[in-house]
Image 1 (tube, one colour):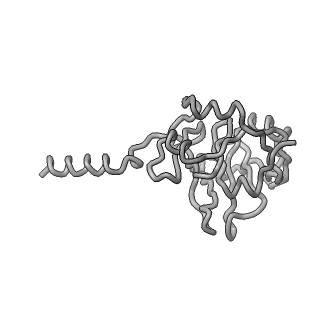
Image 2 (image 1 turned 90 degrees about the vertical axis):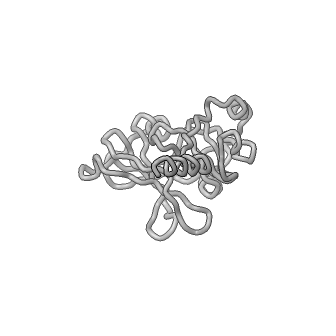
Image 3 (image 1 turned 120 degrees about the horizontal axis):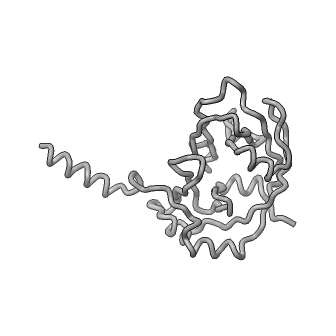
Length: 191
């Protein structure tokens, strides 16, 4: 009985590689990194809202939601709030009262936006740093180990489970992905 259960469990794991897949570090894939040599520069056209964490938020889980492209939202990552981050937010909700919000280490925030927020209330900040970004097509998804031809999981420093990236979205040169709808609404070619 135990042997049968073990064989069934092993068969299920092999049949569903996505369950066992580790996030992929795209920076170690030469075919992807070569694309960044001629990648276009983008800048965020919409201001990003930023604030410092509230004392009662420290140590708590902080989920990041993104558009699912179908009028709803999905969980992208889940992190733990520390006092060494800034909470970044889009100024328009994804849907209802659900916003795309994420945590940014303070040193990265300063490099990207110039100044740290000074309060726990959201204020607008204009991005000063550009990004190089490449479109995620079928070939890129394959290199990233996609099991469904629509998404892949990339390795990121802020979440051991990685970050989901989407076909027709973009990979940014730092270590993150940008969903197709977010890219269309919030970024433009740098001049």
